[in-house]
Length: 337
Image (cartoon, rainbow, N blue to C red; front, top):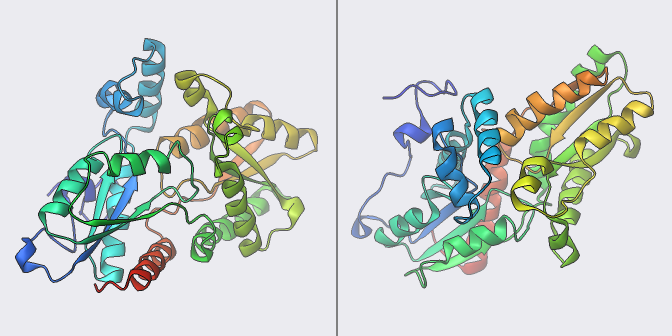
């Protein structure tokens, strides 16, 4: 058995495909409903970056400097644990709801198409699909939906969850990571730190055309702030990771950026900031590089310190949120487990 890079008691979810509901023939399974968790996907090592980026862009060729910059970022963090955390989240959910939970990634293995084929091969009649991107955008959720339906008409009913950004247990999960870490960091700072909630930026044109993502991301932050007991003046919101995305896709991306926000807080006399990414459910390059390396370095260059809340990763409260979503969908469609 491969040792887990996350140190999860010797079990590696991505390498060993740990599952509480192993594959079985359709005749042997009494469950007619399965769950499909959808995520972005991430390469396991820097050498896979060119192939990975070709999936991200749909085959569009990127400038060599963009590819090398992405490769550099992955090399600095050493390993993107997105697949491990996603498969762990799936297994925790499976054990919680006593139902099979599959994982499909849009840009890397296990691909969404392969997960769809596996589900069909096991004879399930209904699939509840949940994107591990709670805020709905056509640049994320929309692409996952398209990928899940790209093979035509699968032999099962697809119940697609488009958004769950305002789920109370999601806000609680983020708050559980925020409050104790923020209080500790503020004590180290010697003064209450301003909180910067973040989510991944998207092209400005999508918002202009009616995409709800910006509004939903800010709604998530408001709910987390309320759950954490933050006052309105304790926090601000910024969109992150425009640099690489904008460089790869062109056009204007929504802001303000984290860097602009840090400068504004510095101008108001703050000596440090506390970042809490509420658009991501686990550690990966946008957290481990963009926040932990790039934003931290930027803050230091401004004579400031930067702290971050831990990602949700294996949060049992996150599992409870997903379980509640599944249960509500099962009740609504009158399906048995």
